[in-house]
Image (cartoon, rainbow, N blue to C red):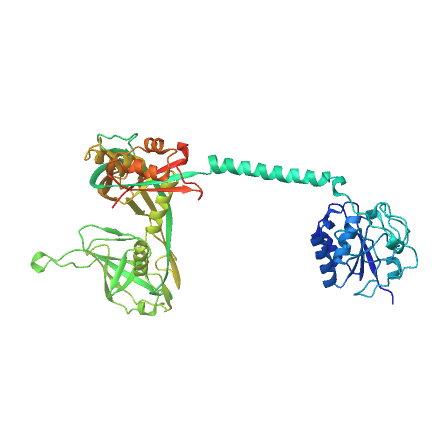
Length: 561
Protein backbone atom coordinates (compact mmCIF):
# COMPACT_ATOMS: atom_id res chain seq x y z
CA UNK A 1 0.00 0.00 0.00
CA UNK A 2 1.52 3.32 -1.10
CA UNK A 3 1.91 6.13 1.38
CA UNK A 4 0.94 9.66 0.35
CA UNK A 5 3.29 12.57 0.53
CA UNK A 6 3.26 16.37 0.24
CA UNK A 7 6.08 18.66 -0.73
CA UNK A 8 6.33 22.06 0.95
CA UNK A 9 8.81 24.78 0.12
CA UNK A 10 10.45 26.74 2.89
CA UNK A 11 11.28 30.42 2.28
CA UNK A 12 14.41 32.15 3.61
CA UNK A 13 12.28 34.46 5.81
CA UNK A 14 10.02 31.75 7.28
CA UNK A 15 10.28 31.39 11.05
CA UNK A 16 10.13 28.06 12.92
CA UNK A 17 6.51 28.63 14.03
CA UNK A 18 5.35 29.02 10.44
CA UNK A 19 7.32 25.94 9.32
CA UNK A 20 5.83 23.83 12.14
CA UNK A 21 2.30 24.99 11.25
CA UNK A 22 2.80 24.01 7.60
CA UNK A 23 4.17 20.56 8.49
CA UNK A 24 1.46 19.82 11.06
CA UNK A 25 -1.36 21.09 8.80
CA UNK A 26 -0.26 18.85 5.91
CA UNK A 27 -2.94 16.38 4.85
CA UNK A 28 -0.40 13.75 3.76
CA UNK A 29 1.60 11.20 5.79
CA UNK A 30 5.02 12.04 4.33
CA UNK A 31 6.08 15.68 4.31
CA UNK A 32 9.11 16.65 2.23
CA UNK A 33 10.35 20.11 3.26
CA UNK A 34 12.51 21.65 0.53
CA UNK A 35 14.97 24.03 2.20
CA UNK A 36 16.61 27.02 0.46
CA UNK A 37 20.18 28.05 1.06
CA UNK A 38 20.70 29.88 4.36
CA UNK A 39 17.50 28.62 5.96
CA UNK A 40 18.25 30.48 9.22
CA UNK A 41 15.27 29.11 11.08
CA UNK A 42 16.69 25.56 10.90
CA UNK A 43 20.29 26.45 11.78
CA UNK A 44 19.34 25.75 15.39
CA UNK A 45 19.20 22.36 17.07
CA UNK A 46 16.41 23.64 19.34
CA UNK A 47 14.26 24.65 16.38
CA UNK A 48 14.95 21.37 14.63
CA UNK A 49 14.00 19.39 17.74
CA UNK A 50 10.77 21.41 18.01
CA UNK A 51 9.99 20.67 14.35
CA UNK A 52 10.67 16.96 14.79
CA UNK A 53 8.54 16.71 17.96
CA UNK A 54 5.63 18.53 16.27
CA UNK A 55 5.85 16.18 13.27
CA UNK A 56 5.90 13.09 15.50
CA UNK A 57 2.89 14.31 17.51
CA UNK A 58 1.03 14.92 14.23
CA UNK A 59 2.10 11.43 13.02
CA UNK A 60 4.00 12.84 10.03
CA UNK A 61 7.21 11.47 8.47
CA UNK A 62 9.40 14.51 7.95
CA UNK A 63 12.20 14.60 5.34
CA UNK A 64 14.39 17.67 4.86
CA UNK A 65 15.49 18.20 1.25
CA UNK A 66 18.88 19.92 1.58
CA UNK A 67 22.64 19.54 1.03
CA UNK A 68 23.79 22.20 3.50
CA UNK A 69 26.42 20.70 5.79
CA UNK A 70 25.35 22.61 8.96
CA UNK A 71 21.78 21.39 8.61
CA UNK A 72 22.97 17.85 7.85
CA UNK A 73 24.95 17.87 11.09
CA UNK A 74 21.98 19.14 13.07
CA UNK A 75 19.73 16.59 11.38
CA UNK A 76 22.14 13.83 12.46
CA UNK A 77 22.19 15.21 15.96
CA UNK A 78 18.37 15.48 16.21
CA UNK A 79 17.71 12.29 14.18
CA UNK A 80 15.74 13.90 11.36
CA UNK A 81 15.67 12.24 7.92
CA UNK A 82 17.18 14.14 4.99
CA UNK A 83 17.49 13.73 1.23
CA UNK A 84 19.52 15.52 -1.38
CA UNK A 85 16.57 15.89 -3.75
CA UNK A 86 13.02 14.72 -4.19
CA UNK A 87 14.38 11.84 -6.32
CA UNK A 88 16.92 10.80 -3.69
CA UNK A 89 16.39 8.24 -0.95
CA UNK A 90 15.95 9.57 2.57
CA UNK A 91 18.52 8.72 5.22
CA UNK A 92 19.59 9.64 8.74
CA UNK A 93 22.94 11.45 8.92
CA UNK A 94 25.45 10.11 11.44
CA UNK A 95 25.61 12.04 14.71
CA UNK A 96 28.63 14.37 14.52
CA UNK A 97 31.55 13.89 16.93
CA UNK A 98 33.40 16.78 18.47
CA UNK A 99 37.00 15.89 17.50
CA UNK A 100 36.83 13.74 14.38
CA UNK A 101 35.67 14.19 10.84
CA UNK A 102 32.25 12.59 10.48
CA UNK A 103 30.78 10.81 7.54
CA UNK A 104 27.14 10.67 6.72
CA UNK A 105 25.68 7.19 6.97
CA UNK A 106 22.33 6.29 5.54
CA UNK A 107 19.92 4.66 7.93
CA UNK A 108 16.50 3.26 7.14
CA UNK A 109 13.43 5.29 8.07
CA UNK A 110 11.52 4.08 11.07
CA UNK A 111 8.45 5.10 13.01
CA UNK A 112 6.10 5.18 10.02
CA UNK A 113 7.88 2.35 8.10
CA UNK A 114 9.35 4.39 5.24
CA UNK A 115 11.22 2.21 2.73
CA UNK A 116 14.85 3.48 2.55
CA UNK A 117 15.29 1.81 -0.79
CA UNK A 118 12.74 4.15 -2.37
CA UNK A 119 12.83 7.84 -3.17
CA UNK A 120 10.26 10.21 -1.69
CA UNK A 121 8.40 10.28 -4.97
CA UNK A 122 8.33 6.45 -5.04
CA UNK A 123 7.13 6.28 -1.43
CA UNK A 124 4.11 8.33 -2.42
CA UNK A 125 3.22 5.89 -5.16
CA UNK A 126 4.22 8.11 -8.09
CA UNK A 127 5.50 6.31 -11.15
CA UNK A 128 6.90 9.45 -12.67
CA UNK A 129 10.10 10.97 -11.40
CA UNK A 130 9.53 14.03 -9.15
CA UNK A 131 11.81 17.04 -9.55
CA UNK A 132 11.92 20.59 -8.16
CA UNK A 133 11.33 23.62 -10.46
CA UNK A 134 13.80 26.48 -10.52
CA UNK A 135 11.34 28.55 -8.49
CA UNK A 136 9.59 26.10 -6.10
CA UNK A 137 6.70 28.53 -5.53
CA UNK A 138 5.78 28.40 -9.22
CA UNK A 139 5.45 24.60 -9.20
CA UNK A 140 2.01 23.28 -10.08
CA UNK A 141 2.61 19.53 -10.42
CA UNK A 142 5.49 18.22 -8.34
CA UNK A 143 4.85 14.60 -9.21
CA UNK A 144 5.11 15.11 -12.96
CA UNK A 145 8.50 16.81 -13.46
CA UNK A 146 12.08 15.75 -12.80
CA UNK A 147 14.16 18.59 -11.24
CA UNK A 148 17.18 18.93 -8.99
CA UNK A 149 17.86 21.44 -6.20
CA UNK A 150 20.32 24.18 -7.06
CA UNK A 151 22.43 23.10 -4.09
CA UNK A 152 22.35 19.39 -5.03
CA UNK A 153 25.66 17.56 -4.95
CA UNK A 154 26.32 14.71 -7.36
CA UNK A 155 26.50 11.16 -6.15
CA UNK A 156 24.45 8.81 -4.09
CA UNK A 157 24.33 9.25 -0.36
CA UNK A 158 25.32 5.60 0.01
CA UNK A 159 28.59 6.32 -1.79
CA UNK A 160 29.41 9.01 0.77
CA UNK A 161 29.87 6.54 3.59
CA UNK A 162 33.54 6.24 2.76
CA UNK A 163 34.11 9.96 2.13
CA UNK A 164 35.37 12.08 5.02
CA UNK A 165 32.98 14.75 6.22
CA UNK A 166 34.85 18.03 6.15
CA UNK A 167 34.00 20.47 8.94
CA UNK A 168 33.06 23.95 7.78
CA UNK A 169 35.27 26.75 9.01
CA UNK A 170 32.93 29.22 10.74
CA UNK A 171 35.48 32.02 10.32
CA UNK A 172 35.09 31.78 6.55
CA UNK A 173 31.23 31.94 6.62
CA UNK A 174 29.62 34.97 4.98
CA UNK A 175 27.35 36.95 7.41
CA UNK A 176 23.66 37.31 6.51
CA UNK A 177 23.01 40.88 5.35
CA UNK A 178 19.22 40.40 5.65
CA UNK A 179 19.54 39.38 9.29
CA UNK A 180 21.83 42.33 9.96
CA UNK A 181 19.38 44.71 8.27
CA UNK A 182 16.44 43.35 10.30
CA UNK A 183 18.35 43.88 13.51
CA UNK A 184 19.22 47.43 12.47
CA UNK A 185 15.51 48.18 11.84
CA UNK A 186 14.42 46.55 15.10
CA UNK A 187 16.97 48.34 17.28
CA UNK A 188 16.34 51.65 15.48
CA UNK A 189 12.58 51.30 16.09
CA UNK A 190 13.16 50.47 19.75
CA UNK A 191 15.46 53.45 20.12
CA UNK A 192 12.96 55.80 18.45
CA UNK A 193 10.15 54.49 20.67
CA UNK A 194 12.25 54.99 23.80
CA UNK A 195 13.19 58.51 22.73
CA UNK A 196 9.54 59.48 22.12
CA UNK A 197 8.44 57.83 25.37
CA UNK A 198 11.14 59.65 27.35
CA UNK A 199 10.14 62.97 25.77
CA UNK A 200 6.46 62.56 26.68
CA UNK A 201 7.26 61.06 30.09
CA UNK A 202 9.54 64.01 30.92
CA UNK A 203 7.93 67.03 29.26
CA UNK A 204 4.32 66.25 28.30
CA UNK A 205 2.68 63.83 30.75
CA UNK A 206 3.95 64.97 34.18
CA UNK A 207 1.33 66.97 36.08
CA UNK A 208 0.94 68.14 39.65
CA UNK A 209 -2.31 68.80 41.50
CA UNK A 210 -1.82 70.69 44.73
CA UNK A 211 -4.78 70.96 47.11
CA UNK A 212 -4.34 73.63 49.78
CA UNK A 213 -6.72 73.51 52.71
CA UNK A 214 -7.02 76.80 54.50
CA UNK A 215 -8.63 77.89 57.71
CA UNK A 216 -12.03 79.38 56.96
CA UNK A 217 -14.45 81.84 58.45
CA UNK A 218 -18.14 82.10 57.65
CA UNK A 219 -19.55 85.34 56.32
CA UNK A 220 -23.29 85.52 56.91
CA UNK A 221 -24.88 87.66 54.21
CA UNK A 222 -28.28 89.14 53.48
CA UNK A 223 -28.77 90.90 50.19
CA UNK A 224 -31.83 92.69 48.84
CA UNK A 225 -32.01 93.44 45.14
CA UNK A 226 -34.55 94.33 42.46
CA UNK A 227 -35.06 92.55 39.16
CA UNK A 228 -36.61 94.79 36.52
CA UNK A 229 -37.17 94.07 32.83
CA UNK A 230 -36.86 97.81 32.12
CA UNK A 231 -33.30 97.97 33.56
CA UNK A 232 -30.55 97.97 30.92
CA UNK A 233 -27.41 97.35 33.02
CA UNK A 234 -26.50 96.39 36.59
CA UNK A 235 -26.63 99.29 39.02
CA UNK A 236 -24.52 98.25 42.02
CA UNK A 237 -25.39 101.35 44.03
CA UNK A 238 -29.15 100.72 43.95
CA UNK A 239 -28.78 96.94 43.54
CA UNK A 240 -31.07 96.84 40.50
CA UNK A 241 -30.44 94.04 38.00
CA UNK A 242 -31.67 93.88 34.41
CA UNK A 243 -34.25 91.10 34.20
CA UNK A 244 -35.74 89.05 31.41
CA UNK A 245 -39.27 87.66 31.38
CA UNK A 246 -40.03 84.35 29.75
CA UNK A 247 -43.41 82.74 29.33
CA UNK A 248 -44.92 79.51 28.08
CA UNK A 249 -48.50 78.91 27.07
CA UNK A 250 -50.22 75.66 27.95
CA UNK A 251 -53.76 74.41 27.63
CA UNK A 252 -54.62 72.02 30.44
CA UNK A 253 -57.43 69.52 30.01
CA UNK A 254 -59.42 67.35 32.36
CA UNK A 255 -61.82 64.57 31.48
CA UNK A 256 -64.92 64.20 33.61
CA UNK A 257 -68.15 62.26 33.65
CA UNK A 258 -71.36 64.23 33.20
CA UNK A 259 -73.80 63.80 36.10
CA UNK A 260 -76.61 66.29 35.27
CA UNK A 261 -80.09 65.02 34.45
CA UNK A 262 -82.40 66.66 31.92
CA UNK A 263 -85.76 65.81 30.38
CA UNK A 264 -85.34 66.14 26.63
CA UNK A 265 -88.89 65.05 25.83
CA UNK A 266 -91.45 67.20 23.98
CA UNK A 267 -92.24 70.53 25.62
CA UNK A 268 -95.77 71.32 26.76
CA UNK A 269 -97.46 74.47 25.38
CA UNK A 270 -100.55 76.58 25.89
CA UNK A 271 -101.86 80.14 26.25
CA UNK A 272 -101.05 82.68 28.92
CA UNK A 273 -103.48 85.51 29.81
CA UNK A 274 -101.22 88.35 30.94
CA UNK A 275 -102.35 91.09 33.35
CA UNK A 276 -100.52 94.41 33.68
CA UNK A 277 -101.06 95.99 37.11
CA UNK A 278 -99.31 99.25 36.37
CA UNK A 279 -100.40 102.69 35.32
CA UNK A 280 -98.96 102.37 31.79
CA UNK A 281 -99.20 99.88 28.98
CA UNK A 282 -96.34 97.38 28.90
CA UNK A 283 -94.75 95.45 26.00
CA UNK A 284 -93.65 92.05 27.26
CA UNK A 285 -90.70 90.73 25.20
CA UNK A 286 -90.49 87.22 23.79
CA UNK A 287 -88.78 84.75 26.15
CA UNK A 288 -90.31 86.27 29.27
CA UNK A 289 -91.02 83.38 31.59
CA UNK A 290 -94.09 82.73 33.70
CA UNK A 291 -93.64 80.25 36.56
CA UNK A 292 -96.03 78.22 38.68
CA UNK A 293 -94.73 75.92 41.41
CA UNK A 294 -91.34 75.52 39.66
CA UNK A 295 -92.74 74.94 36.15
CA UNK A 296 -91.76 77.74 33.78
CA UNK A 297 -93.21 78.67 30.39
CA UNK A 298 -91.65 81.19 28.02
CA UNK A 299 -93.58 83.70 25.91
CA UNK A 300 -93.20 82.79 22.25
CA UNK A 301 -93.47 86.35 20.91
CA UNK A 302 -93.61 89.90 22.24
CA UNK A 303 -97.02 90.97 23.50
CA UNK A 304 -98.35 94.43 24.49
CA UNK A 305 -100.47 94.37 27.64
CA UNK A 306 -102.64 97.43 28.56
CA UNK A 307 -102.61 98.77 32.08
CA UNK A 308 -105.40 97.65 34.44
CA UNK A 309 -107.50 99.86 36.68
CA UNK A 310 -107.21 99.91 40.47
CA UNK A 311 -109.85 100.03 43.15
CA UNK A 312 -110.04 103.19 45.21
CA UNK A 313 -107.83 103.41 48.26
CA UNK A 314 -110.95 103.22 50.37
CA UNK A 315 -111.70 99.89 48.78
CA UNK A 316 -108.22 98.58 49.33
CA UNK A 317 -106.55 99.90 46.13
CA UNK A 318 -106.19 96.42 44.57
CA UNK A 319 -105.65 95.84 40.84
CA UNK A 320 -108.90 95.18 39.05
CA UNK A 321 -107.20 93.10 36.31
CA UNK A 322 -109.86 94.39 33.98
CA UNK A 323 -107.51 94.56 31.02
CA UNK A 324 -105.27 91.77 29.68
CA UNK A 325 -103.59 90.30 26.60
CA UNK A 326 -103.11 86.69 25.51
CA UNK A 327 -99.81 85.14 24.35
CA UNK A 328 -98.68 81.65 23.34
CA UNK A 329 -96.18 80.04 25.72
CA UNK A 330 -93.95 76.94 25.64
CA UNK A 331 -92.42 75.06 28.57
CA UNK A 332 -88.74 75.80 29.16
CA UNK A 333 -88.03 72.05 29.51
CA UNK A 334 -89.54 68.91 28.10
CA UNK A 335 -91.47 66.43 30.13
CA UNK A 336 -94.93 65.27 30.92
CA UNK A 337 -94.80 67.06 34.25
CA UNK A 338 -95.40 70.33 32.38
CA UNK A 339 -98.87 69.22 31.30
CA UNK A 340 -100.62 71.50 33.86
CA UNK A 341 -104.30 72.18 34.41
CA UNK A 342 -105.95 75.48 33.46
CA UNK A 343 -106.58 78.57 35.60
CA UNK A 344 -103.23 78.46 37.39
CA UNK A 345 -101.70 81.76 38.38
CA UNK A 346 -98.14 82.42 37.15
CA UNK A 347 -95.56 84.98 38.29
CA UNK A 348 -93.33 86.70 35.75
CA UNK A 349 -89.57 87.27 35.74
CA UNK A 350 -90.27 90.68 34.15
CA UNK A 351 -91.55 92.15 37.42
CA UNK A 352 -94.24 91.88 40.03
CA UNK A 353 -96.71 94.03 38.04
CA UNK A 354 -97.06 91.32 35.38
CA UNK A 355 -98.97 88.13 36.22
CA UNK A 356 -100.43 85.40 34.11
CA UNK A 357 -103.38 83.07 34.11
CA UNK A 358 -102.62 79.92 32.21
CA UNK A 359 -104.77 77.74 30.06
CA UNK A 360 -104.44 73.98 30.18
CA UNK A 361 -100.85 73.08 29.16
CA UNK A 362 -100.40 69.92 27.11
CA UNK A 363 -98.23 68.01 24.67
CA UNK A 364 -95.30 67.46 27.03
CA UNK A 365 -93.54 64.05 27.03
CA UNK A 366 -90.64 62.75 29.16
CA UNK A 367 -87.17 61.60 28.00
CA UNK A 368 -84.58 61.75 30.79
CA UNK A 369 -80.96 62.03 29.57
CA UNK A 370 -77.56 62.72 31.21
CA UNK A 371 -76.21 66.17 30.44
CA UNK A 372 -73.25 68.36 31.46
CA UNK A 373 -74.24 70.39 34.46
CA UNK A 374 -72.76 73.56 35.93
CA UNK A 375 -71.70 71.55 38.97
CA UNK A 376 -69.69 69.20 36.68
CA UNK A 377 -67.82 72.18 35.22
CA UNK A 378 -66.96 73.59 38.66
CA UNK A 379 -65.58 70.24 39.88
CA UNK A 380 -63.36 69.73 36.80
CA UNK A 381 -62.13 73.32 37.01
CA UNK A 382 -60.94 72.82 40.59
CA UNK A 383 -58.96 69.74 39.52
CA UNK A 384 -57.19 71.66 36.74
CA UNK A 385 -56.28 74.56 39.01
CA UNK A 386 -54.97 72.16 41.66
CA UNK A 387 -52.63 70.42 39.22
CA UNK A 388 -48.94 70.71 40.07
CA UNK A 389 -47.09 73.52 38.31
CA UNK A 390 -43.61 72.17 39.14
CA UNK A 391 -43.06 70.91 35.60
CA UNK A 392 -43.87 74.36 34.19
CA UNK A 393 -41.48 76.00 36.66
CA UNK A 394 -38.74 73.56 35.64
CA UNK A 395 -39.40 74.25 31.98
CA UNK A 396 -39.01 78.00 32.46
CA UNK A 397 -35.83 77.50 34.54
CA UNK A 398 -34.42 75.38 31.69
CA UNK A 399 -35.23 78.11 29.17
CA UNK A 400 -33.29 80.63 31.25
CA UNK A 401 -30.39 78.20 31.70
CA UNK A 402 -30.18 77.75 27.91
CA UNK A 403 -29.59 81.50 27.60
CA UNK A 404 -27.09 81.59 30.50
CA UNK A 405 -29.56 83.16 32.90
CA UNK A 406 -30.86 82.24 36.35
CA UNK A 407 -34.62 81.79 36.68
CA UNK A 408 -36.13 83.35 39.81
CA UNK A 409 -38.59 80.58 40.70
CA UNK A 410 -40.22 82.80 43.30
CA UNK A 411 -41.53 85.10 40.53
CA UNK A 412 -43.44 82.28 38.83
CA UNK A 413 -47.02 83.16 37.98
CA UNK A 414 -49.90 81.43 36.18
CA UNK A 415 -52.76 83.26 34.43
CA UNK A 416 -55.89 81.28 33.54
CA UNK A 417 -57.94 81.95 30.39
CA UNK A 418 -61.55 81.13 29.56
CA UNK A 419 -62.64 77.62 30.49
CA UNK A 420 -64.28 75.61 27.70
CA UNK A 421 -66.42 72.49 28.06
CA UNK A 422 -67.12 69.97 25.35
CA UNK A 423 -70.06 69.22 25.28
CA UNK A 424 -71.40 72.44 26.79
CA UNK A 425 -73.57 72.81 29.84
CA UNK A 426 -77.02 71.32 29.24
CA UNK A 427 -75.89 69.19 26.30
CA UNK A 428 -76.31 65.45 26.45
CA UNK A 429 -73.05 63.63 27.26
CA UNK A 430 -71.56 60.64 29.01
CA UNK A 431 -67.92 61.73 29.24
CA UNK A 432 -66.88 65.32 28.71
CA UNK A 433 -63.65 67.32 28.45
CA UNK A 434 -62.85 70.59 30.16
CA UNK A 435 -59.96 72.70 28.81
CA UNK A 436 -58.42 75.80 30.33
CA UNK A 437 -55.63 77.89 28.73
CA UNK A 438 -52.82 79.11 31.02
CA UNK A 439 -49.93 81.53 30.59
CA UNK A 440 -46.93 80.77 32.86
CA UNK A 441 -44.37 83.53 33.41
CA UNK A 442 -41.08 83.92 35.29
CA UNK A 443 -38.35 86.52 35.66
CA UNK A 444 -34.69 85.65 35.21
CA UNK A 445 -31.41 87.46 35.82
CA UNK A 446 -27.72 86.89 35.26
CA UNK A 447 -26.31 84.63 37.99
CA UNK A 448 -22.89 86.26 37.69
CA UNK A 449 -24.45 89.67 38.41
CA UNK A 450 -26.20 88.35 41.52
CA UNK A 451 -22.92 86.81 42.68
CA UNK A 452 -21.13 90.08 41.99
CA UNK A 453 -23.54 91.94 44.29
CA UNK A 454 -23.23 89.15 46.86
CA UNK A 455 -19.41 89.21 46.82
CA UNK A 456 -19.37 93.00 47.11
CA UNK A 457 -21.58 92.75 50.19
CA UNK A 458 -19.31 90.05 51.69
CA UNK A 459 -16.08 91.95 50.97
CA UNK A 460 -17.44 94.84 53.01
CA UNK A 461 -17.48 92.50 56.03
CA UNK A 462 -13.85 91.21 55.82
CA UNK A 463 -10.32 92.63 55.71
CA UNK A 464 -9.61 92.34 51.99
CA UNK A 465 -5.88 92.95 52.57
CA UNK A 466 -5.53 89.68 54.44
CA UNK A 467 -8.58 87.71 53.37
CA UNK A 468 -10.52 86.86 50.27
CA UNK A 469 -13.87 85.21 49.52
CA UNK A 470 -13.32 81.65 48.34
CA UNK A 471 -17.00 80.73 48.03
CA UNK A 472 -19.83 83.26 47.91
CA UNK A 473 -22.37 80.57 48.82
CA UNK A 474 -24.56 81.42 45.84
CA UNK A 475 -25.26 77.72 45.17
CA UNK A 476 -26.83 77.19 48.60
CA UNK A 477 -28.32 80.67 49.09
CA UNK A 478 -32.04 81.07 49.71
CA UNK A 479 -33.91 83.52 47.50
CA UNK A 480 -37.31 84.94 48.36
CA UNK A 481 -39.69 87.47 46.87
CA UNK A 482 -40.40 90.53 48.96
CA UNK A 483 -42.68 92.53 46.70
CA UNK A 484 -44.08 92.38 43.17
CA UNK A 485 -44.84 95.97 42.07
CA UNK A 486 -45.64 94.84 38.53
CA UNK A 487 -45.42 91.83 36.24
CA UNK A 488 -42.01 92.98 35.00
CA UNK A 489 -40.50 93.92 38.37
CA UNK A 490 -39.80 92.01 41.58
CA UNK A 491 -38.01 92.94 44.78
CA UNK A 492 -36.04 89.95 46.04
CA UNK A 493 -34.04 88.94 49.10
CA UNK A 494 -31.07 86.59 49.24
CA UNK A 495 -29.55 85.05 52.37
CA UNK A 496 -26.46 82.85 52.35
CA UNK A 497 -23.16 82.02 53.96
CA UNK A 498 -19.90 82.85 52.24
CA UNK A 499 -16.50 81.34 53.04
CA UNK A 500 -13.48 83.59 53.57
CA UNK A 501 -9.87 82.50 53.94
CA UNK A 502 -6.28 83.69 53.59
CA UNK A 503 -5.47 85.65 50.46
CA UNK A 504 -3.38 83.37 48.27
CA UNK A 505 -2.42 83.66 44.61
CA UNK A 506 -2.28 80.42 42.60
CA UNK A 507 0.19 81.73 40.00
CA UNK A 508 2.60 82.97 42.66
CA UNK A 509 2.54 79.63 44.50
CA UNK A 510 2.97 77.67 41.26
CA UNK A 511 6.08 79.67 40.36
CA UNK A 512 7.53 79.12 43.84
CA UNK A 513 7.19 75.32 43.79
CA UNK A 514 7.98 74.66 40.09
CA UNK A 515 10.77 72.06 39.81
CA UNK A 516 10.78 71.29 43.55
CA UNK A 517 10.52 67.84 45.09
CA UNK A 518 7.30 66.72 46.71
CA UNK A 519 8.60 67.39 50.23
CA UNK A 520 9.98 70.80 49.36
CA UNK A 521 6.70 71.74 47.66
CA UNK A 522 4.72 70.96 50.83
CA UNK A 523 7.23 72.83 53.01
CA UNK A 524 7.15 76.00 50.88
CA UNK A 525 3.34 76.19 50.92
CA UNK A 526 2.87 75.14 54.55
CA UNK A 527 5.16 77.96 55.70
CA UNK A 528 2.43 80.46 54.74
CA UNK A 529 -0.01 81.59 57.46
CA UNK A 530 -3.50 80.08 57.85
CA UNK A 531 -2.63 76.93 55.91
CA UNK A 532 -4.35 73.86 57.40
CA UNK A 533 -2.83 71.18 55.16
CA UNK A 534 -1.20 70.62 51.77
CA UNK A 535 -1.80 67.61 49.54
CA UNK A 536 0.39 67.04 46.47
CA UNK A 537 -0.54 64.49 43.82
CA UNK A 538 1.67 63.70 40.82
CA UNK A 539 0.65 62.03 37.56
CA UNK A 540 1.70 59.63 36.06
CA UNK A 541 2.88 57.31 38.81
CA UNK A 542 6.60 57.65 38.00
CA UNK A 543 6.63 61.42 38.65
CA UNK A 544 8.08 62.40 42.04
CA UNK A 545 8.69 66.13 41.65
CA UNK A 546 6.70 69.19 40.66
CA UNK A 547 6.94 69.98 36.91
CA UNK A 548 9.03 72.95 35.91
CA UNK A 549 6.28 74.24 33.59
CA UNK A 550 3.77 76.27 35.59
CA UNK A 551 1.02 75.38 33.09
CA UNK A 552 1.23 71.76 34.33
CA UNK A 553 0.60 72.72 37.95
CA UNK A 554 -3.00 72.93 39.19
CA UNK A 555 -3.67 74.73 42.48
CA UNK A 556 -6.93 73.99 44.32
CA UNK A 557 -7.96 76.01 47.34
CA UNK A 558 -10.24 74.24 49.82
CA UNK A 559 -11.46 75.93 52.96
CA UNK A 560 -11.10 73.48 55.85
CA UNK A 561 -14.00 72.74 58.18
